[in-house]
Each structure stands twice: as structure tokens, then as C-alpha cells.
Image (tube, rainbow, N blue to C red; front, side, top):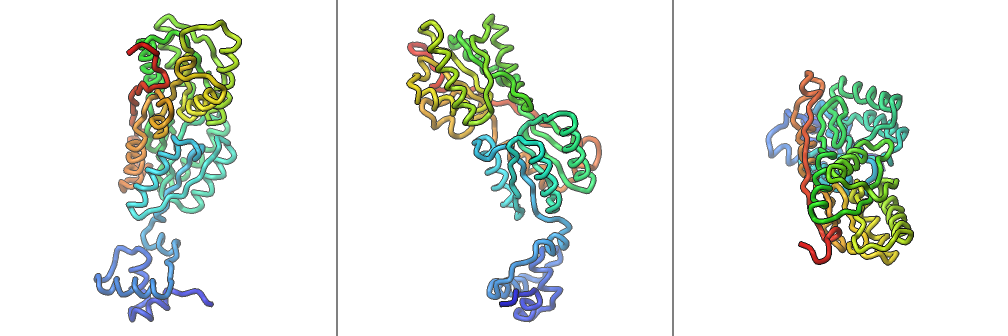
Length: 351
């Protein structure tokens, strides 16, 4: 069966080809409502789907937004991606989503593919630092995209161009550590800075700085991936540390620089028979929805994830071009999260 053409729709509706094109391909020069409804009804009846490239030409934009995240399985990225999708869809645009798994080659390939799809904007979620050469390659792609009229928006790490929403990671984790010390915690374990993920290093650095100010040195410093599996490995190490350390009535309080890791550690500890929070207390960072649903509820820094996503979409859709002047190229908005003390760090018999 031959494909339905725009000319078939025009003939069925009894209008010119130009009129049918203006109605169905997104032109601002649209005829009266009665004519437009007639053309749309013919298109629906015949099964005609407008050509996206033709629509892009008519509107001088594709209506596509490229969204790049590190790991869609991580509820931090999933929460932001969902909110971006909802906001963009409400504007009659569409999101093209890709994940990088924090691999430089994957990210470069994804950016090139999205740019080839003629997206109107690129939204990059999550911090990264792969090294001078790889960062330069990404920057070159983004600068070229911006020069050609595209918008660049970042959530997590300043890109040095476009607009960026930057969480105050160090300050927030410093506040969290201080709150835990005030609660009465004195034994701590932390996940050291992870190569290539500046945000994780900033969070751990701020946490340790607060401990140092309180005269406390971490009892355990370990490494783990910033994933759920990394949390499982962290839980295993904490279990092994407990079994090889002198018995103590005070719990060991671990800070994981991402909620997905903290939740993974919490689950692994429970599977190994370690009680949370009487033996090990667990704190995370991010404020993902699952933090309040875990058992026990997770202590964390709750970032305004939905508001961050909405701000990013506002920038994407506001009609200005990211390359129009220095101020647009250097815009940053800093956000602070709230300390949420959950059951996972509660001290029995206190507060």
C-alpha cells in the first residue's frame, strides 16, 4: 500500500497543498480554525503523519531537545529526566534521551548523534571530568553547537558556556556532617573522592571538612562506584570492617555521596544481618523519592530536583539564544539542598 502523501490530504480536504502544509507542518501562517480542523480530520482519516523535517523547516526549529544523563537507572537522573520530559512535552516539543554510563566515547558519540538530529538544545545532567583532551573534545562539540544557534544547559557542573544549575555540594554535605555530629555521632566512614566525578569529591570533601572542624577523623575511608552496585560493595566493606573491629555500642555512620549508593549499602547491610541504624548509620545525598520510602527512611541532602529540571526547561524554551552575549554564556544558578535526618541515622535513646 503506497504511503499517504500531503497532496492526498489536501485533495481529501478540498484545500491547496500550501494550506495543508501550513496546517500540518507547524507554520505560523495558519488558516482559519474551520479549515485547519478540516485538514486535520482528513489527515487522521487517511493516516497521514507529518514529516518531522518538513515541520522543522516550517518552524525554523526541530522541536527536539537532547537530554544526556549518566545512568537512567539511578533515581537521581530518572527523577530529573521525568520532570524534563513532562515540561518539554507540555510545550509541544519532544525529548531525545541518551545515557553515557560516564564513558567519554559514549558521551561524544551521543552528542554528535543528537546534534545530527538537529536538536534545538542540549541538556547535560551530572558532573564529569574525563581529562584535558576528552573535556576539550566535548567543549568543541558544544561550542560549535552553540555557535550554530543551539542552546546548552547543564545540571550539576559548570560547562563554561550556556547556562548551568550548580548544587552547592560541599556546603550542603558540610551542613549534613555538622548535623550528624550535633545529633551525637562520633564514628564515621566516608567514600573517598571518585576520579572523574567532581561532585562526589566535593560532597565527601565538605563532609570531611566538617568532621575535621569537630575534631573527628573518619574511622574508615573507602572507595566505591557511584551506583547501586557500588552501594552493595560499600555495604560489604562496612560489614567486614565491623567484624574485624573491636565491639562498640556507638554505630558507625557512613556518608555515601549519592542516594543510589546509600540505598544500595543499606540493602546490603540488611542482607548481611547488620542492623541499621544501631550498628551502622547511613546517610546519602540527593533527595531521590525512594529515600523517604526506604526502611529505615534515609538521611540525606534533599536537592530540589523537580525545580532544577523546571529551571533547565525554562532556559531551553525561553526564546533566547545561548550564544547571544557573554552574560548568557556564563549564567549559573546555585542551589542548596535541605538536611533531612531520617531513621537511618537515628541514635537509639536520643532525640
